Image 1 (tube, protein in one colour):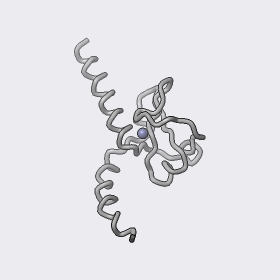
Image 2 (cartoon, helix red, strand yellow):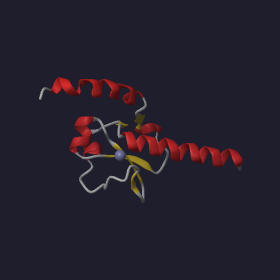
Image 3 (cartoon, helix red, strand yellow):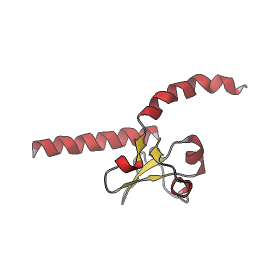
Image 4 (cartoon, protein in one colour):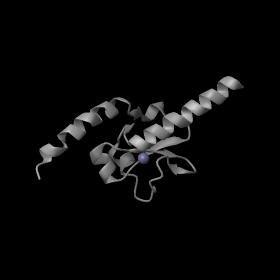
Length: 96
Ligand SMILES: [Zn+2]
């Protein structure tokens, strides 16, 4: 049960890190949310005002991401959902 076993997973997560979204890049109405675990693992969620975390994880705890000053979203599911929402908005905008 050595932690070396997980290294390949973390290496592959390096790719994901590159597509992390900095909080200043978020559209109005979105912010970062996460508990202590998210702070430690760099997996902050993207919180949409009025509807919650994009990945569906309940935003029930204290927002440690804000307290600790985490700057970027790292939750894979949130990033995917955010990118999808934004590309949908852009498509709609180009049609208008
Ligand atoms: Zn998330």
